[in-house]
Each structure stands twice: as structure tokens, then as C-alpha cells.
Length: 313
Image 1: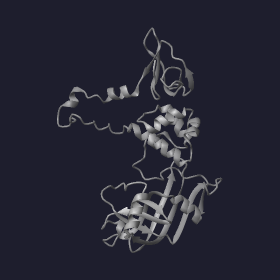
Image 2: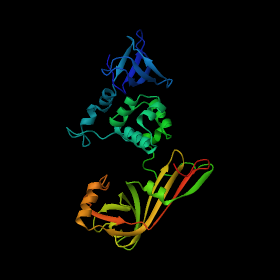
Image 3: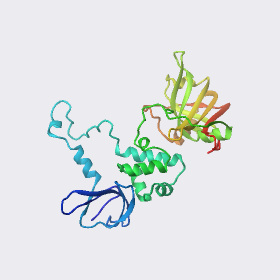
Image 4: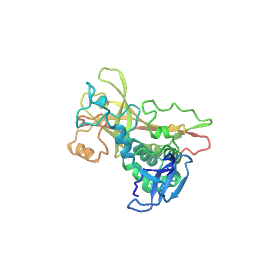
């Protein structure tokens, strides 16, 4: 018997063939995938060391997914038939198997947790957590709930629930505290890159607030755009730039507001340096080679926390 992390161990009655118990393999003790296994049982959420007997077999998620995605005879006729050699569109509401792992990794990094600590809290092996974060996978509900508890979030959030809703729809804290942030903390929260919003007067004369991928370079907030765009209108004006984070699960968060003059970066060496140091490509895509720099002259911030928590985290 050979298994991989994420496989399903099924124990059946030899007499009837009826499934008696099943669980997700969350830990291996041998590199070749031979028993024993750490199994999280779907009926109890308990994790036990299992030496499978003759009434047990392994089911691989990949095989199940291929069976689920196999086209029926009616799928191959009509104008909606898939073109040979192309992949079918996932069913509505069905998450991309890789999305869960990416969200788990992001939540873990956001909370400053190592894989080892997160795995310990969720009662899974670090190797399995590595597998979830780096490979397309669909963990069991029990494992997803354990990870959500370890990361102080919800299983629905890890599956991408609410991604199309604006943040802040959770319940307010019973005793919230609104804290002012000093400039040192504001600069720390701005970090080195991310997504923020710049408030400008658009070319048509109307006020606008637009999201941009930004970097912090030598105390300046810089972002890429294209000539004639709304963000490009920031150049030559005093603008406001805002970054925030909302923790839906904990009903708390922070925001930082920077105000200062914006200019277009024109020095070729400076442009090349910014492009070299950029962490990400603009999410909007396309050619965006105009750099705008904002030098904050005023930096303020707020954080909402429970009354019994410190303002700094």
C-alpha cells in the first residue's frame, strides 16, 4: 500500500463492502508512502496513527477529480462543447484546488506564523501543510476547520467566500478601541509593497479614488501607471494615498493615510532602479511604464482593536 498526503483512507467491511470509516491522510512516516499514516477521521475529527489492515484501501483525490470532470456523452455535442485540447471551465461555486493553499499561506504569513507552528495548532504534519500550500489540493472539511481555527479565521474565508463583497460586513466588536498610530507604526504598516488607493482629480475634473499596486522606496510611495490614466493625474498635485487592512474574522483592522505632492519620475536611471526593485507587476496588466512618486508630508493612521488589546501588534 502506497499513499500520498491528502489521500483518503477508506476502511470497509469485508463482508458487505459498505464503507465503515474514512479519513484524510495528513501525515506520512515513510518517504515511499507505505504505512503507517496519520489520519484525520471524518466522523470524529480525531487524528490517529493507523496501520491499515486488509479491509482498507487508498483513494486518490486526483482520480476522483478526473472522474468528476469527465464529460458525459451530452457534453460533447452542441455549441457549448469544449474544444479538444482545452480544459473545461470549473463549475460555478467550485473553488480552484490551488486557491485554498494560497489563502492558507497568506493568512499564515499575515499573522507571522511559521509552518511548524500553524501545523501544530491545526494538528497536521508540517509536510502536509507544505503540500497544501504548494500543490493543488482540496483538504477535507475537518482539516479546513482545523486550519481556520489555527489562523483565527473561518473555513468559508479560506475557501474564498465573500471575495466579491466589500470588507467590514462582520459584527462590530463589543468594546472597540480606536487608537491613533504614530508615524513609525504608519511607516511599518505601509511596508514595502501592496495595494493602496490614491485620491486624485481625474482628467475630466471629477474626484476619483483608484486602487494601485505600490512600492515604498526611500520613504516615497511609488506606483506604475500609463500616460493619460486616472492615477497618472496625481502627478503635479497634492494627493491622498490610503492603505488599510480589515480582519473580518476578528472585526478589527487599521488604516494609514499619507498626504503629499506627487511627481512623475523622469530620470532614466531612477526608472530602471524602480523597475528592478519592484516586487509585483500591476494587477491591471498592460504596458504601465510611467512611475509616479508621492512624498508624504503628513502621515496618520488608526487601528481598531478590542479594548483589552494593545494598539500595536
